[in-house]
Length: 258
Image (cartoon, rainbow, N blue to C red; front, top):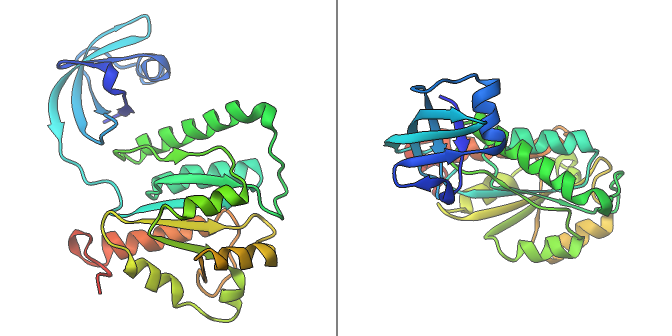
């Protein structure tokens, strides 16, 4: 069933009004007809099965016929922060990271970032990233769309770290020295409803100064296994590990509760 994220304002009683790109997708891309069903997801994560009643001028009217109970989100919030990589790599991280359950994406200006942020194109860039996250969340049948930030300064990233329960940074020196225990230990420390900020370097990794500053602000360096991963692969590895820990290793998301 095709899924669309809608605002609270779109609902009037048992009717849902859909416009914009989503209405175009229903009418022109999917070529749906009245009587067909779609899933409408509201900002609080609730999902309603709706029956299309009218499609006119790329505006869609649908009636709520059933509310669905869904458990599609990770029990913990994982935020992915990354030193700005090349554009297509960052978009890949947003798309696949959304599919894997990330709660949000925070690009930041790193010492070794190849890409330089163009403030003149800022609004369009961020809107594109948000659209990628929304479409990926719909495809993955999630109940929430991850947040996507405009690029932060390193100081702003450190400040965001103060708002979460656990913070780490992926550091290749930990892998080279076969220190692999930190990530499993950090994942097991989280509790349902908790938040983790995972920081990844750009293509060239972290500078020594950045690594030291992260340590001083309570970020624990972590290995992501014995192999050195590309910048766009590393966040997806971590999210997969978190999914195994929280969703697959034991029933009902009770894995890792030592």
